[in-house]
Length: 120
Image 1 (cartoon, rainbow, N blue to C red):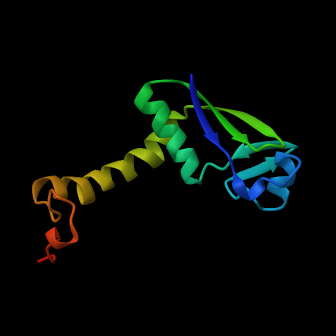
Image 2: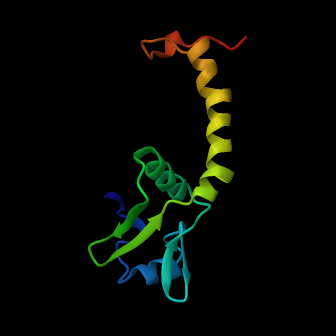
């Protein structure tokens, strides 16, 4: 089981998740026919899809909790989303950011400001 739990401080004084979304306190959620769901264009959705792919699971419980309410949503792995959105972004990150740093590090191993060299 994968649980992704968010405790939105901005919604701490609301009485329900629906109220929090209606007051725009949960910008990563939307409501359709009274059902709250995580927006597919939000970073949290990308995070959940990554967790599902890496762990080879099919479903994650996305839980939002405050002292006044708890909302649970089941999010299932979306292979089309993964192939159309995630793969391209991850390849770009690897090729443009991670790989160059592995091949020719710009930052020293000590992680000190004095170890940072100016780009050529």
